[in-house]
Length: 239
Image (cartoon, rainbow, N blue to C red; front, side):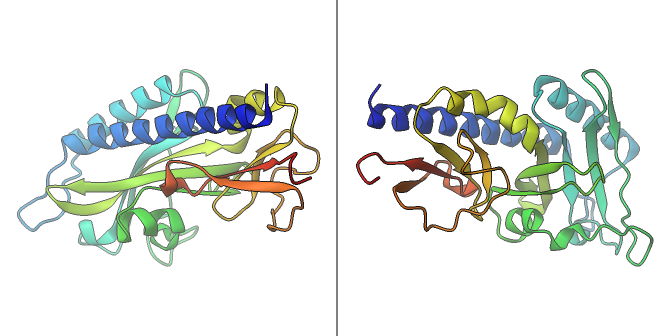
């Protein structure tokens, strides 16, 4: 296999995997939001029956997507008409059990989670775009590095928050590292902030910052562009 063929193969498989991840979270958004309505005041209706349906949808999504650690709907305060936030967020306990996670949503209270300030929420709710953010330490306190993939949540033409899922970096490695390991030349997958997500080279460890000063290496922007991912690879012609 020539170098150009190797790069093309890695690029195509990585892009296909992330396009599928984005398509799946967009499909999740369609299911979660499909039954939601705004009340007469223009606020989101989150009645008990609505939340039971959200639970069912989230559970099905986690069962069908083994690499997803958690998923759900994160609602903007402005869509609720209250100072308190609201998250319908479900996490994987094991292969067959899932639980709704309770966040601190009251301003000033213990462990208040001011999620509207986080980049993943701002980019989807405020900017209205899909986004992949991370890696960062999971808020849930399990000391795992996660990536958060979000899409805007829109109900009756009104943006009400974000639909999101988390992928642990260790699960990302499990899914994609075999593709890189089988290559002879060094490859590294970089986040939007140029942190190494995974690599087949001891010279690029997960979490390292690729400075852009790597002699003999080329950066390639990957699709979908909303995720900001880059492929760093050794170019034999430049080494």
